[in-house]
Amino acid sequence: MNYRHIYHAGNFADVVKHAVLALLVEHLLRKDTPFRVLDTHAGLGVYDLTANEAERTGEFRDGIGRLLAEPDPPAALAPYLRAVALLNGGTGGSPRLYPGSPWLVRSMLRDRDRLVAVELHPEDAATLAATFRHDRGVGVHQADAWQALKAFLPPPERRGLVLMDPPFEARDEFERLADGLARAHRRFATGILAAWYPIKDPEQAATLHRAVQGIGVARALAVELLVRSPVDRFRLNGCGLVVVNPPWRLDETLGELMPFLTRVLAQDSLASGRVHWLVQSL
Ligand code: SAM
Image (cartoon, rainbow, N blue to C red):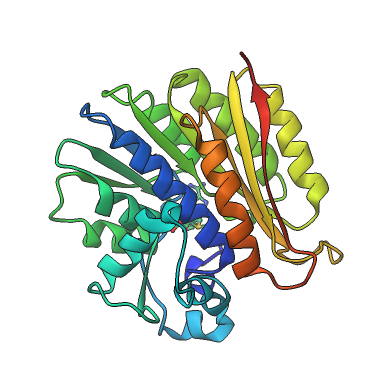
């Protein structure tokens, strides 16, 4: 396990992932009934953007840095930007801290909702546990994500969201992600499932999409951003999320949001965003 998210925190891929994640949580908050979020690859929770590791790559400058320089971001970004501001004491300008997925989710939950955060790396899991040690709304588990799908699904509330955000270090990570989606769907058929993936070679993303089309879900949406033309298939050219059981009208919201994110996060003139249904049964 060599992957350390601190090198990448707040980059363009985090912006896309966390903007969508915040919209999904916001949707769940619309009903009074409690829900649970299972974050299977939780990471550190909070990232210090002044740390050497973050500074060394400077990736956050072309992600959250660019976004915060925009004078008039679309309303769909409000829940995400609120969390970033909250972590930084409500200040605008360049943030010192960046919220990882568990912190972002927790900042939005009510007393009756729960977060289960799973992280395999012992040090990161310990840091995460320390962050939430006084918080009864959050359970942190040092465990394997794919085992966690068995252990924690379905949630007792029968309402909620699963975020799968693997590091893509292993060669078979795309297959494992498709398998994870299938497994999570079997155990929690009504749950919203969100799975993040990198786009280096777009053919890998297409293979994942075909796999999702074969796992028997009724509705699955894909949202993707390419920050540059994927000529060099070894670089991180973009990223995407598959969302199973997306909230009503998420496709429209993201359809309006992606042109903005594409313009702001573009790294060449061929950057593009798209939102498309992988499965849409009537
Ligand atoms: N979701 C986090 C966020 O948005 O802030 C970032 C997660 S990072 C991309 C992936 C994390 O998964 C790393 O912290 C890594 O240690 C962890 N990890 C790797 N393999 C894992 C596994 N099998 N089970 C659980 N966590 C794993």
